[in-house]
Every structure is written in structure tokens, then in C-alpha cells.
Image 1 (cartoon, rainbow, N blue to C red):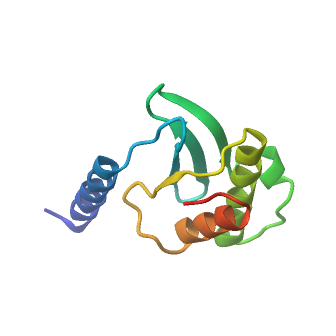
Image 2: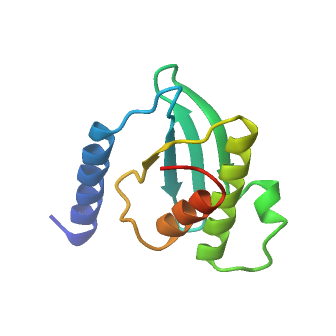
Length: 122
């Protein structure tokens, strides 16, 4: 197995392990984070009803207009603040954090800490 396939396989194993342990409910929905090379996405999901309650990303107009050629970590912090703000508007206080197999480091950590500072509890 070459290095790229091994890395992808490890990511998928971590993702399955994390998702097996957590499940979002209407009282405590799941904050799912996804990242690509350029962007970062966050959504708050009610797994019981299978619906997304709140979403934010680096492509959102609120974030895109607020950043001027910033670094990826700063953009992730802005997305974290935005998701916390939108969650408060929908009266969502507590969530379960789903890092989706990504290591709790860098952009994922920045988004999570900004969401905590914005008022989300997890």
C-alpha cells in the first residue's frame, strides 16, 4: 500500500471510530466539521430526524466579506464564531463535537475554540 492510500485508510478508520461513539439528538445536536485544502465547513445536525439545523463555512458571505487574505486558521476561527452565533439564534447551547477523523489540531482546533468562545458548550 502506498503512502497516500495508507493515509486515506487511516483517516477513514479514525472517522468511523469517532462517529461510532457519538450521535446527535434534538437536545444535544452534533457539530460536524469538514475541511478541504481551501475551505472549512461546519454544520449542526440532528441525527434523530436527519436534518441540518445550522451551517456555516468559509464560503459564507459573512465570513468571506469579513476576511481580507487571512490565513486558514483565522478563517476557521471566523467560521467557529459564525456557527456559534447562528446556533444561539436557534436556541442551541450544547452540542457534541464531531471532528470526523481529523486530528484535533490546527484549523479544527481553532474552529472548536472559537465556537466555545462564542457560547457553544461541548
